[in-house]
Length: 272
Image 1 (cartoon, rainbow, N blue to C red):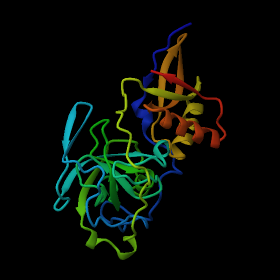
Image 2 (cartoon, rainbow, N blue to C red):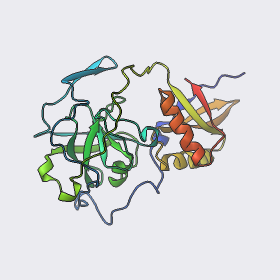
Image 3 (cartoon, one colour):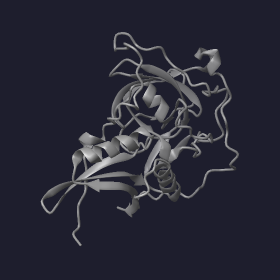
Image 4 (cartoon, rainbow, N blue to C red):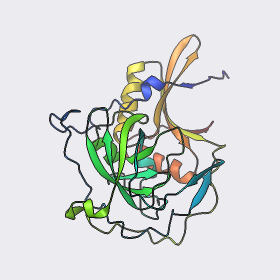
């Protein structure tokens, strides 16, 4: 059996699904679209009992949680996450909803609010920070699928943004709805083993356009970890569309459920 060394194609990781990105009229950098707030944004009346330890460590790196979000303002880049985490519990002990305007941040108190401005197009929204991350790459904030969509984000990671904390009393009245909290007693204490990544392979094709169509199809249904990899096989370029890396059976099962619900049954799970 021939071993094929697949390499991720960074150029093709950009989210090209035009159906994913929402339009907002003639909004430009000079004329930003009105800030939007999800109906289930919630009010941060006091810090959550979850996710607010003064310090925490992941992958050998220690993070210090801010005592308050007041005055926080920072520039950086944004990533987004979606269906593979839908329905899971966030670090703030809330249910992750890819269609809500929420986000993950390493150090802001949970929950808190922030305005996120896409510096590429001037669009801006208000999100509820209810999760920790991102911990892969150097992004400052990780947006929900809906938040990224509203900001016109076209790439899965590396989108330049401004993040400015907002106090609850600055929010529109309609945004002040108490969020849904999970009834789970506690999050699992077993750390995720990131030394054993898995990928769900949706398919491999010699035709680039066929693989691009599949990439767009999977990205458009919220599979944020969809990527295209390429390799040489018998002197021929092959294109593989896969979802990953995934580190738990729950993540793998979520991806499989989404693929099956979209009529895609011929996939396989492989370990890296």
